[in-house]
Amino acid sequence: KKVNLAVVGATGMVGRTFIKVLEERNLPIDNIYFFSSSRSAGSTVTFNNKEYVVEELTETSFDRGIDIALFSAGASVSEKFAPIAASKGCVVVDNSSCWRMNEKVPLVVPEVNPQDISCHQGIIANPNCSTIQAVVVLKPLHDKYKIKRIVYSTYQAVSGAGHNGYMDLENGLKGEPPKKFPHPIAGNCLPHIDSFLPNGYTKEEMKMVNETRKILGDYSIRITATTVRVPVFNGHSESINVEFEKQFDLEELKEVLRNAPGVVVQDDVANNVYPMPIYASGRDETFVGRIRRDESVESGVNLWVVADNIRKGAATNAVQIAEELIKMWNK
Ligand SMILES: O=C(O)CCc1cccc(C(=O)O)c1C(=O)O
Image 1 (cartoon, helix red, strand yellow):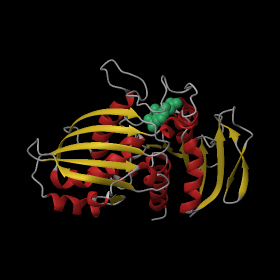
Image 2 (cartoon, helix red, strand yellow):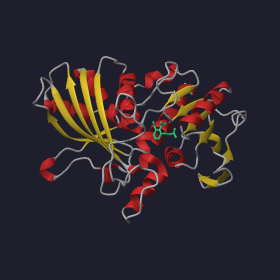
Image 3 (spheres, helix red, strand yellow):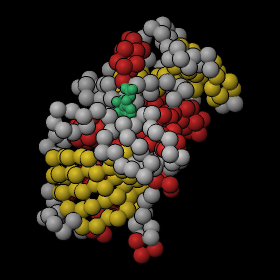
Image 4 (cartoon, helix red, strand yellow):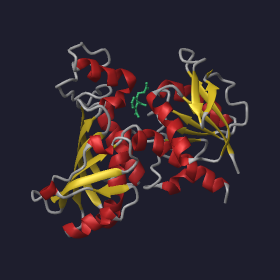
């Protein structure tokens, strides 16, 4: 059975990657529609060698029998239009932060909690890029050793801030002042992603804390996070320190990761083999290395985790959710 699919935010960095991934994975699409703000409406996009005019998103955009809508147009667009789309029988896969913590909305990484997809009531939320790559690695370890505490330190690429963020690094390297970031990003690090909250954390840091617990379905896990913007064009890196309730054997733990869906272990420091953004960029897997025991606690491990924040961190994860929906409907 083929589906009618819409892409909302079609001209953005994630929107354009939705198109690329939809083509690569050859989803059974009957009709496809592309929507954007009035600013970009009228431009054209190419899908499967055919040109489409991008339409302005309106309240009636979903009156044409759309089965799935992939949203990546910002939280305010999702807040207004995702419920409208859902009310017309369309299932929304929303890449914004807007609906993630709503108890009626499953928050899904297909390799981690695919069973939550069937609980949807019209909207399924795509987690934050930094959370996705972390839980792909943490889920098999949580199942086997039960996680007690996580310390996240992230090194996030400028592509996570869209085209303007990307240009701040490109132009910053030529000495030009930043437009998107509050300070120069070239040759610098900004411990400031999204806005600051009263507790001194940023929204990005609290997204990792709250989303990890919801996706793993365990609100007893203690988590803290520091998220940092670094002068890397694409691909997020994360240092993840994990403490377990149970003891583990290091070689067994590495084997668990080697067998984990969506994970590639790159860990041979004698030959300078470890995950790097320049390698992960353009790929859909989550790469993990520097796997070593944390001798400072009873049962702990340090991990270095890298993934393409636009692909697995956003577009590919959302398209994988759409694939699961289509599989459910074709049973
Ligand atoms: O509301 C917006 O304009 C988007 C802000 C944003 C930029 C980059 C990643 C995210 C995210 O949380 O995935 C988000 C978000 O949806 O809050």
